[in-house]
Image (cartoon, rainbow, N blue to C red; front, side):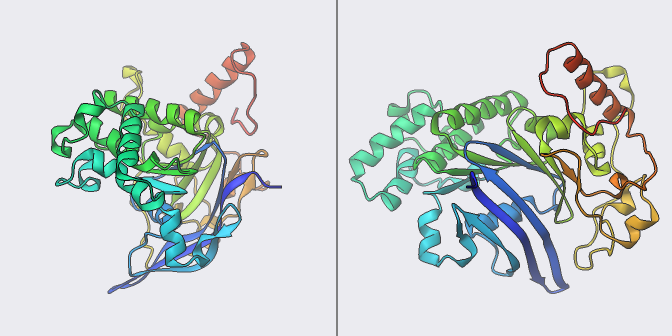
Length: 358
């Protein structure tokens, strides 16, 4: 029996616009196991948020799911009625949005806002709901939670507001928590605190988390597995170590190479040239080909299938085809791979990673 709590299969989502039909999500599949954190990473516009909003049934009016399945504990959410989805949202599956100030009602005390999902889904008394709200605010680290229940959002710092939004999302102890770039508007110190908080909550509540971000540095601190998205498709997925230390797709190489490091003598920060394709008319071949310095003629002509690197690691790049030429990844990627191999040989890491570039 599968231990997946969520299974997304062959999902395709289009948006009707004045300019034409935008093929925003193009055959996306992934799964989420109970108690794990899956990070979905990629540039803005890659389809991360659209994919996860479809799980919640929160797509824009001009969006249409062309095909696919989103199975939560075996039930296809795409076939659920509005009433059934209202039950799932905020109860079984919750979402933390990017900007807490637009997520919170500025005219309502925060205690009442945290208690509101309980009143909707649990049908408990106001007094019990407020007591539970206080407990959850304490759980997420709001100082003097009991005294601050009647305060309004503007009376809290940015980091505290994000903690309040997390409290609202977890007050019903959901089985899946979707975090849509929850640390983007916060400074580095507060980012680290929010990541630590989410890890602690996951351990206490055994919640499965989908963490959406464009920042691979954040992913390292929270994810078990990583899915890399580009132009509406997942181009590589694997464990966090496989993606960070033995990546196989040129787009993943570019993302990792562009991450700042503490090595100030490393020269100019790398970047990925060009821009993502226009999904009004997606390319016939690999969508990353125009920006890929390693692109071959077949990248222009045909989309690559997923090639298996290990039991947990797959990448959609023609470079993994047996007939493809040997290509050395960027120096930053080779250095990461060498560091991991060194730690493994020194006995500081127990598991080797397949598919490394030597």
